[in-house]
Image (tube, rainbow, N blue to C red; front, side):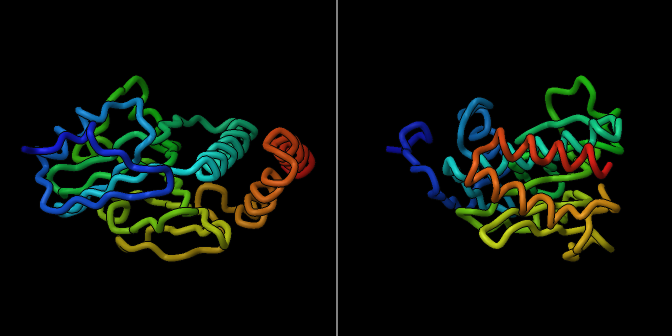
Length: 212
C-alpha cells in the first residue's frame, strides 16, 4: 500500500527528503499539498526536500520582507512581492520556494500573474531564505538565474550576488548598493527579538527617514 503525502506529519523545524522524484511526481505533490500550506519545497535533479519552518523562522522572514518593502517604497521603486511563490523550470529540473522574493527590475513582467514558469518568466531580482533551522542550497537559485540571494541565519545576514553563473558572497547589495544592508538588517532583526516587531520596525523607519 502506498502512502499519501497527507498521511505524513512533519514537525516544525524538521525536514523530509525524498529521492527519485520525477517532474510529473513533483507536479502532483505540489497540486496535492496546495498553495495554503506551511511546508516549503526545494527540488533538484530528482531530490525533493520538504521543510516546515519554526515560528522564529517566520518572524525573521516577515520583518526582513517588511524592511525591504520600506526601502523600496521610500525610494518610490516599483516592485512586486511574490512571497513563497514556487519558482520552477522543467527543462532545468529545478524548483524552489524561497521564504520571500521580489521582482524589481522585472516587476512589470509578472503583474497579474498567478503562476510562474522560469522557462518563460524572468526570475525574481531578489530572493530571501531564512536559514535558522536548515541550510539553503545555492544550486537551485544559481541554475534558475536569481541575481541576488539573501540568507539570514544564526550568524546574521549573508548576501550572495550572481556573477558569471555562480554566487559570490558580497558585503553590499546590488539592489541597494548605497545602503549598509548587512549592518542594518542584523541590527533590527535582533532588536525585534528583544523588543518586538513593532518597535524594531519603528526604529528602522526612523533610520530610513533620517538617512534616506
